[in-house]
Image (cartoon, rainbow, N blue to C red; front, side, top):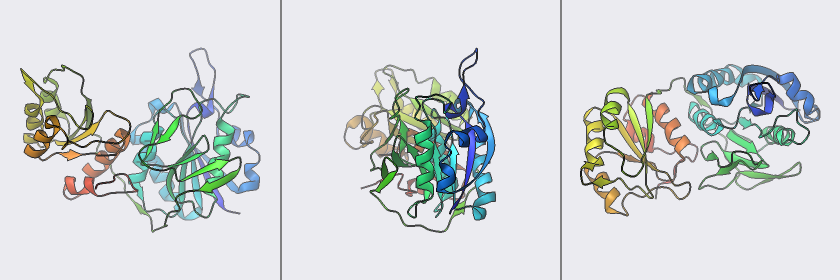
Length: 327
């Protein structure tokens, strides 16, 4: 039997009702007790890294998670991480850059209802996460949820309450579960693992709204190393009569701030060359385009790329774990 380490971080799956709302209090012992059949799937050991609502998790916690996995990498055949759903797309994307090329599975899961509830998605999600982790095809960072196996660089939460909360964006699912049977759609090649230990969190995500002022750019130029601009449509950057956003982008670049343009639209990515409102910006300035990357992935990769040695643009544009498809 394979040996899997369960790493618990809190989230809805581990929550109980309190006077101030659901709060993570269930430990690994309670999680494993709720799904006793896991003992028949593999040899399970567990550790409680955090017990927090995922709203309170950030890059500092994910660095600690990556470090824990690195310290235990040779001792286990795979890892299952229970995590709250609200920031799980950021977590799986971040771990996809901190732990690259790994031939062992690092599987994230969680739930929309507590594992203590009678009618919950938690038990199936946890069981499926382990079933994927022990399979011979399992490798890399994945999210397992509602019967889907999704690449860590392609996952996004699209529903706030329903059990089918996550979607694979602009890329096929790796596998699906039918009951306890896994159907693999995209088998992957395994490769030697490489760990990274630093992130630069000086990244700001600026979501454009019609008619917004340019004033924010002066602040961003002084306080951030990179700005991700969530543009309109396929990459539209406005130029109003008294506010040309090109001036704001120019200010950022003059101050050494890296600029990445993505889209607010969920599917099909950006293409700034289509309309003049995007093409003139891309032609004039040395900016990056995110194409079909999710916003969570863009932000995570930017934090990772800023911390690496070498040209930021080259590092960012290099595909990692199928995070970007450039024609």
